Image (cartoon, rainbow over all chains, first blue to last red; front, side, top):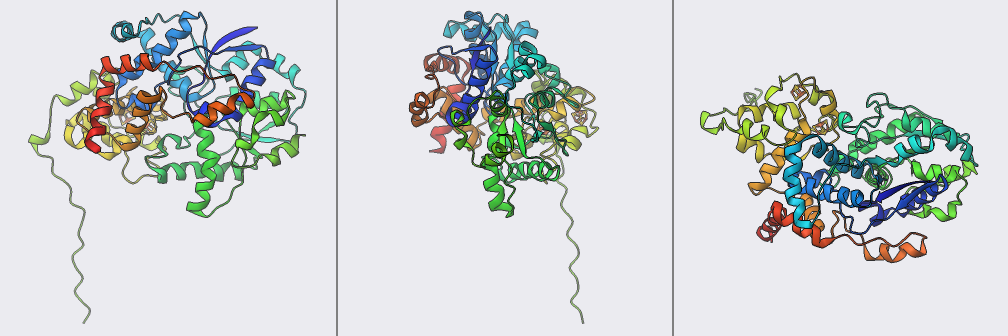
Length: 291
Length: 184
Ligand code: SF4
Ligand code: SF4
């Protein structure tokens, strides 16, 4: 059994029990233990970095310190958290001066950043710690016939030099994990482009144009659903479809599922346990295809 | 007789006056972590060509913002709404042949704009949420209550005390509060 300190962030506990439930249940089934540490805060994402970089690095590092104290590596579900924490972790490990500066700030909260731990996204954990072979053996309800459009979002892949997640131009991790569940991966145009999630609230017009493009292209490719890795992408594409309908008068009815939900279903976890009602776009079409 | 057509008004190109230029600006920006390579942007335009925002926006052009920064057009850059449009997708960072971390430069510019008193509402709201609750997005009390019934473990509390300390020493809380009072 491999153990990780889970970093949940805010968006998932605030509005996506479907993500948290499916991830916790599926990872437990795969022998990954998640430990909830006290005191974890916000990851200080790009909008906060925009206000004050030092404060953001200190806040991110504070959370890494908690994991260091518990002698655990961190696992995130949200790719936004993955990116913010990884950037802080890598920047501080690489730059002694910056590390010293942030440590002076952290000492006010009784912490010291050592740089002894890793930040991982759960997709990496499933790939590296579980492995495709063992994952396959655990699939009891293969998602045969399901055509899935993988949407990485931005913050798993880029900046690639800092995150080292996968080849940023031709990533394979996600596609392989989808196919291991027995589903079919479908390719679509402009797959690696941003969904506009971070612009929601600042420029809804741009954000909706970007989300709409995903819906157009995945529909054209004949996908049954889009699979996501990030709660923001999920909001942009799931709830976003309601807004796209109002703005463009177009209905896509494209179910959006987190990869963890597909994983949980394929591992035979009862859909009733997964809070699937959280989805604005009903997932019945997907369930009917696989059950 | 047909009416005389008005001469076509072409868009006025704003002249850059020497006193608008702050020659120290690019050096200031380049000192911020991640923004060093602003100095070597050679204006190839890859960033704008690959930017998902520029595809849908008429005004957002990262290449132009890099140039304006290099030229020292401090006031124009810092007061521009455009610097807040970057979605931090990092495509440009991956593609820039000069390794300029465009989004880190924009982050540095935003930090400077904030110091000059500019902070768009959403950004301010997210920041004050952190000070109040420890999280950028507020977790509704109802969701916390429902966790157990849904089979989720209780959510450990965020350390507001630590957030308060870190925000105070870095000046983050002051920036956020100051703006708030002004806008109220
Ligand atoms: S891609 Fe890099 S070098 Fe080219 S214009 Fe953009 S910042 Fe400058
Ligand atoms: S990081 Fe910002 S500027 Fe660069 S491509 Fe993405 S949205 Fe455009």
